[in-house]
Length: 243
Length: 185
Image: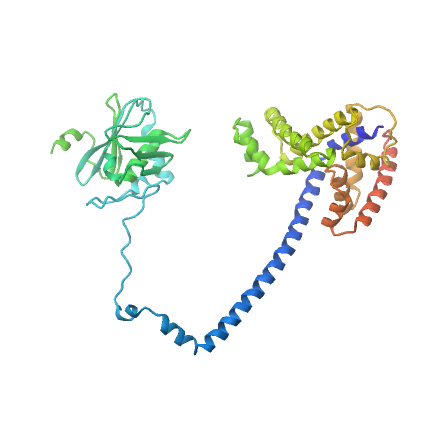
């Protein structure tokens, strides 16, 4: 048998033998690395001990620990006993952190990024053929047109969501959808490949606006409302907008 | 990344499969190739060819475990390259390996087909299973992965001389074992 042939034939030895040799190689490397790490820890520990020792000597030479702290304390702290913790900000909803400072209730529980909300959206979107979609949000007793998505998912136009985005370039991202304020009245919409635009949009819009409910109207007139505190089905958003 | 996830990426024909494979096994493949070829640029080429070969064979194959599958491809590609280099007198690191293997087989022409390769591999596997674990690792590291004796000895915590002696004895035992099994050495 030729030597080269034997060397090639070795390629077919059983796999677990290869794995065993390689795993052991990694383990041996780990042992060597641990030894180095242990040595490093010893060195760092020795240096830290020296620092503590010198610090102690210095403090003692300054008259003790209490004197050092007193000399460095801010004078006002002792005169403001009633500092209370700051009020928490209106909560961050999943994926978006916006609060325009207005009188809106920032509630997005119905649209958390948890699977329950996703299931609701998915269920209600199933079987719905949507080409042009108009989103409205219901908040503080009013419906407002929020966003309009064109047939092929192109960036939405005339979007009231801009009210919620501070400046051009600011963005909110949620559920694979990103809404970015542009220089014009438009809001650009992008989505991750494979992400469901409608689902992501519902979640993103709800997060931005803190809506209690989101409604969208399909081109064929189908009206879908998602959320807990919207008026009953059949309610006309156009009528409300005029009020 | 888990091997299963990498295989799934290949099955889905996702380009990030190549990157994931390279990140996990690229260095190992290059090392195997380097041990045989002794040439950095040839070894890098083998590494790249390995990724391509995995792309072309997965699917239909769904290797599990993945590591031996990838390493085997890398080794075979390196040996092919070695044969090409050797034919044109462009020698490589495998020369040293081959000189040691001369203790096992006599380097005479004989039946060298796929069936003989399988029989030989099976016999070597059986032989190795009968050895102590450390000796088994030593043999596989040396003659499959092509790692150097000094490096293996250092990692296993033995002297290079001790490792060399063990390998020498194993080669002799393997030759006797193969003869008993009827493998034409």
